[in-house]
Length: 206
Image (tube, rainbow, N blue to C red; front, side, top):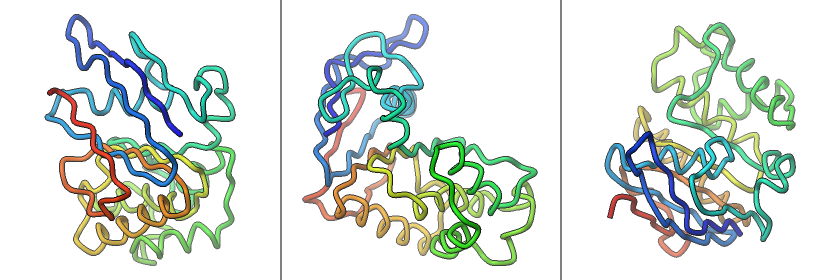
């Protein structure tokens, strides 16, 4: 279970959100919604341990994430709004580098299969990532989800710049993650489109 209790964060003198509490059991997706500036990205970063909250606790399976930093981060995939690709690396190299840094190295064959699964055209596999379109770059970043068996996925606006086919492929992948007992936390401006029985909603700014 991911348990967030009484979380508050500020940006300078401005309060982004306060007293956020939610528990997400395994096999669920938490959809975080809210207007621009409501703190969605800050909350995601706090969940990942990247931005310390001003108040509150975040627990993973009953223990504070700060008490189990290495174990927690090894079971986590975070894909932010800024997708974090290296412009001079190819899509294949980007996936392998990201998975290596997370402690879960993958073979070239698995990286290729992941790119195929999210619909990246084979002609793009060995091009520098900087020459790809925004949608292609987003798909390259998301391909890590097809390499992953980590139990927690944290995603910031994952459907940005995706076409209808890629969006559907991503929905199917997210559904599979929760069906196998994982947890997904996603900030989004649109309906996720998963089985409603597996989705929880949290709206910031209300």
